[in-house]
Image 1 (cartoon, rainbow, N blue to C red):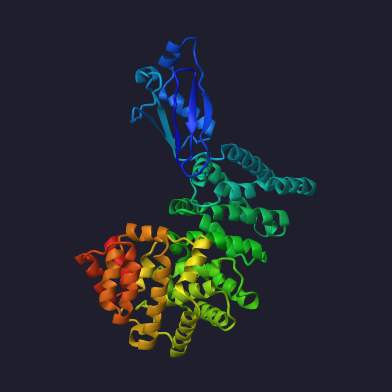
Image 2 (image 1 turned 180 degrees about the horizontal axis):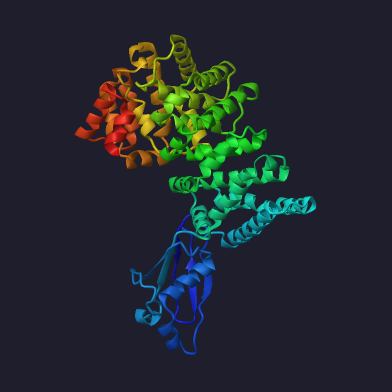
Amino acid sequence: MTYHDTHFSLGVNLHCLTKCEDTTDNLTQTDLQIPRLNTYQEYYETVTIGHVRKAIKRNYKIPEVCQIQVLYSEGPIVDDTLPLSHLHFKQGDNLDIFYYATAKVDIIDEILADIDSLTGTCQRFSNCYDKDVRTDLLQIISDKESFLRSLTFIVFLPWNTPETEAGKLYFVSQGGLDKLMGLLKWTVDMGPLGRNLSVIVEFEKDLFLSLWGFADTLQEKLLLLNMECLQLALRVLTDNIEHNILVHHALGLTQMLVEIPGARQIMIDNPKSILKIAECLEDRIETNLNSNDRFPEATIICRLSHSCESHKILTQKGIFQILLEVLRESTQRNGHFFLKYLLLQFFMNVLINPRIPNFSKQDLSCIEHMMTSFLALHKWNQLYQYETKNGYNCSTIVPFIHALFVPKHCQIYTDPKLMSTYLLVTIMSLKNVLNQPNKQELFIQQELQDFLTIACWYLPQELTPQISDIMSFYKPDVPSLQNITITKLGIEKDGFHSVFNDFRS
């Protein structure tokens, strides 16, 4: 969102015509008041471009951490100490101001004050052993914690808007995220005592929801990961608590962070958490396999399987059989198609890892049958519509490319029927992903174009036209020798993903 403010008049006030280029709003005029001295000459010698920036930010609620660009005579002015007198204004000249977005600064300031107040209340609760006083403090927490809903749904959402990004930036710059993490750590550290207090459970649930809403971009996810947010979520998952809604929100935040390789390693080092997530997914067999709640458990399993290092744990008999049974039940009972898709992605990721011991023929036959059933019932545009509607993002396209190149030493390579079905599901996934503009951009950023061209050299001839259709959004070039080598070594040895990471690291 860019605002273009014009018409700087010679005088004490800045008369700005404001137009938001992303809307159809009419031009609006605003007076920006800048403190002045007794004479215009003294005013222009004293007031600087820095004062102009501050006035603009104050009037339009632009966070201090956000940059604005000032232009005069079509050139940028970067020196904030420059007095206005040095610009030699003439009647009718324009001073143009460009800035990215405003933020709900007043609302965020109120929320920050509530966070400070609640932080003090929580500390008093921890240090107090008087039952009546604790009851009063719990009531204060119950009354105050509604600010979290405003933070989540007014400041952090919707995703991918300039106003939201500016609001998050301001919130972080004011120490809000650190304080929010402090409150979450306090609720998790309460342990069994907190689990027996409905107010604390509700508070903890809303804290997880707010952080779930915050974690949109890769930078935001990395910020939370560095603050050990994932470890707190995993503590909740492995505490065997009975509050399903709290577990659900901890899973929701986990699914946002697990895309990051460092997060996956944290989970690999905590196998108990992976088993717990599989058991949460298993509970769906007893409840509703057709519910539409974005399936955080299956999303976590799918994204976790993007790291080959996780496959040893994920294919342990207990976890693997749980996931296979959920997929089987979901297929037989016409469960939600996206749940089936996520689980199929998991099985496809582990099936082409040549380092994993052979699967039983019975399990392979079952997986092939469920892939065939999925292909018969669903089309790629169903996946596309679901992901775009629900804002289903990913931070890398590599796993989808990796799936095109099946290593010769994995079990699937020797089973023509399973191999053919596997490739059809893989191409369906690629059509879904690479028809989404934001993922097309990510594909280009990661410089993966060569690999679709190379895939046409290895795939059965009847499948290459479908890859060519996928490539229509960019102009293919002759693949580089390095990328040809990555592909060949991946097929001949340890798999594309492993070789790709070695070359690109």
